[in-house]
Image 1: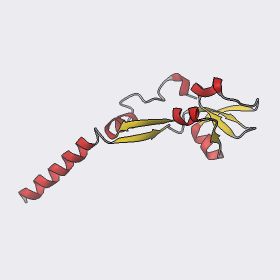
Image 2: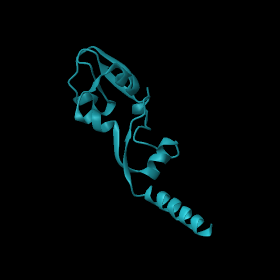
Image 3: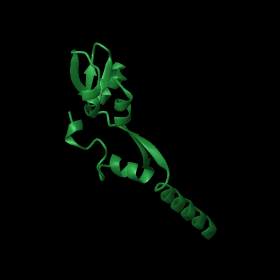
Length: 111
């Protein structure tokens, strides 16, 4: 019984420690603000707006709405701005819980 408890404790400790080293990719929350181009059926993130080649048929929406409509990202800038790469599992959990600011915490992203 004691041996089983030691094994379980060791496995739990290994899982917790691995969370500090294993990188994951975080996707932007669905409530993040994007700009839809209805003519080209693409969306662009606020940091990439000035460099995007868009039509005049624009609307502000959320990332969730853009995904639901089947719109594609306007550029690699938009794709990369809506993904946070190489975040450890521990850090990702803190960001998802709201205990640490994420890439999308500033006013520019709020709709």
